[in-house]
Length: 359
Image (cartoon, rainbow, N blue to C red; front, side):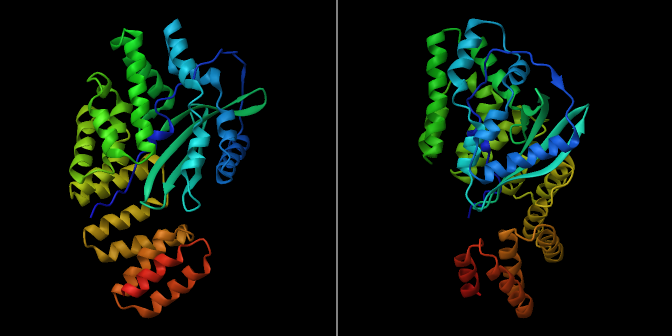
């Protein structure tokens, strides 16, 4: 049975580009307290299904500068045509159920720049991604200069800039460019409707030069994640061959090594990702999955216990630990966990009923 540990939030940003008139407002010094307060406000707004706060906080001049687009009418037209479709905050908020999360997990400063890392977790299939927002201060307000998408392995500005450059270099016929961009848009629409098989056919018909683009290759992985394991594994392998040293390999290869039944390497990828993030307790859940597949019951249970100590409202962790105790005939421990689970109103009680009836 196929188990997808990670899916890509590529639909949140492809293909969308910022372009606007830069006003060159002077940057000011952001404090730690201001950055943390702003990040918490972002988290709260998404929880309230309000994506406009995030969208309105992206500083267009700063983002455009990072895209490094040429000063041409083609670049301006490209950006202008896609700008309205971005709506990153709204797309994040609309993609999450009340069981999912957009969680602020860390603030740090690197080379004088403030950053806020957010975890994106989908409960249904244990999907995982991270966003690292670069924060600035303009006109006494905290703003977003860019966002590094862990699954894509690069800043959003770079993804969008590279997509334009590929089109500009290869599709010199503007009508051809518009047609190919429309095809990518149709692939994205089919994905949103869950029509992955149709999306795959349209993706395979895209010109070869577009399928050299990192973001477009990631789209193929997203398409294949809901097709067969063989197709999914092939899409991951193709990306790995073309971009072997990408920083997103740790996250992507959790799924890749799972499909390849390389569970030890899967565990190594999880540990490497945790070092890259500089610690996230949810990764103990993925360690549990790895040790469970390696049939190392002691370590599997140890990481589940550690997970629930640090994340006492993590529903899937409770489900897995209850199953573990029931399998081991530890009735008292299972009953204690079941009692805690029953008291958590947001937890899916029907799933618990199914677990209990099975054992």
